[in-house]
Image (cartoon, rainbow, N blue to C red; front, side):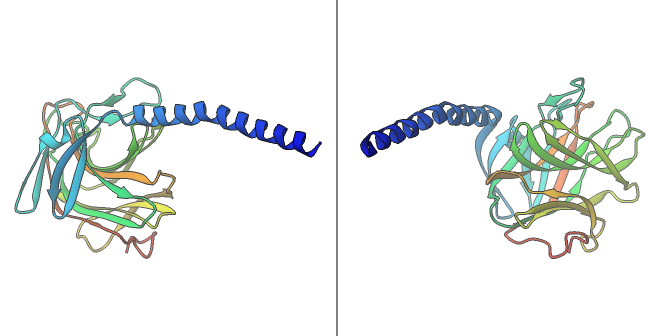
Amino acid sequence: MKKLYLAFAMLLTMTACTQNKPSQQAETNKTEAQNANLKDCDITINGIHFTKAINGGDKLVSESAGVVTVKANPNADFFIDPNEKISQDDAGILLTEIDNTKPFTFKGKVTSGFLTEGGLYNAATFFVYANDTLWQKLCFEQGDHGEHRIVSVRTVGTSDDNNHDVIDSAKSVYFKISSDTQSIASYFSLDGQEWQMVRIYKNNYPQQLYLGICSQAPQAEECVSTFEELSLTTDNVDDFRMGN
């Protein structure tokens, strides 16, 4: 009787494993499909090794004396509209891979390629990217009324769209994104010293995660942005409310 029981238990275990395999394979295939836009590249800027690009992002970047110039693909954006009306995924993005099980802080000074006319939603952008439907961007953007402001977009399946402070008094701002592995927060600063929190949420991103830079021009033929003082460190801010 004991032998019969053991044989039956082994049969159940084998059946369960067999049933799990298609599900696991489907999940792997889904992840690979979501990351189909990722292409290999090899660019090092300020000690940051950028190894992936989306939509030719590596071909849009040049660097001189630590100043990184990023051109936008014409009429390009990265956004998944909840109403499925204005979704786009053609912005060029340059990405570096990180281990999301460890703390990190990604920081730099950004200057967006605003235009007097026709530059609606032009922006210099910091990216947190897991796959095509799980990402966040932090933008210094030309707004609906021609104002220059901080905008953040978090995408989980579809994108939200959050307008923050208007910054018409400065041509450049500092961005910072930091994680202690549990929380991830985004900040901006006018002087690189005093930080304002833009948003904070639980870090539910996978272990394999990418950080990057982008210039977008959803309704224009051009947007040339610059990124300076880029740094990526394996630590996090001490105070997630203050950003220090």
